[in-house]
View (cartoon, rainbow, N blue to C red):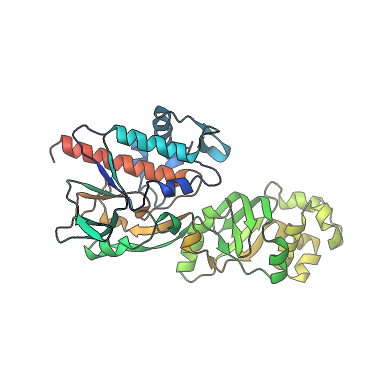
Length: 381
């Protein structure tokens, strides 16, 4: 809750606020996740970085906050939390804006942050006119670099670098992976889903679905492995993912289906209950010798190795990692060099999977930052 003695101004680059918020609503508006406590905290990396922010404003707090604004929510699949059916993202955004306006928050549109002046005050540009703003505290919410259609970019990193604040180049997160399909496979199966699978890389395994695309794979069984793929690429190690097409069946159970007999490959589809795309995928990434031997074929069903060539570009990513280096921050997300400048949300170098966690991280860092300012004002700091 904002204190009555705070005068709050929001400077927005676009003609209206919340374009990226609305983009998050495309294809399903999971506004947070029902996970709480350590189950919620452990979804964010680096481990423990957001512990104070999450504990001060968790997913229950987000749902209560929305309910107070007349936006009831429900828990959907995999713990995702959505506004009640029939409530559109634009309505949620409008409720938030109305609440802020009721609290005397003033919006200033088409005001683009371009630099800091000699006193380290932010400078905004409107119609080619640049004006420096002076305030007791500044909260920057400039975002990551994905979804440039909403106005996002990484130009702000240069301005923070100039005042001695270390930043890290942005990289893709929660994105698709590039796989070198054959032209024949690509033409036949791009757009085909792989359902009820698990994908593993190193010691990490995730169950879900993936979509075969013209470039490789994407989907809810792909996004959670991106951090590990990115780490291997940074070490110049070729990432290899492993697909299990039958995660609910053991190798022994699959072998029992053939009872030690040699069966022709044309019967694989029926015997192992595989579909056409699964068979084609296994065939592409196994040798003929392995494919024609039922027992070795079973190993491919349970552990098909697929090399990953690279990640999809930032422009296509749901989120990014990079931004303000965490060692530059105080506990309340203020800059150590400039304690009256606070940076939150995707500007910071943290990561989380899809499923409501990204928005929750933004809500939590915003609440924690605002609370720290109010506490400073109350204490006369």
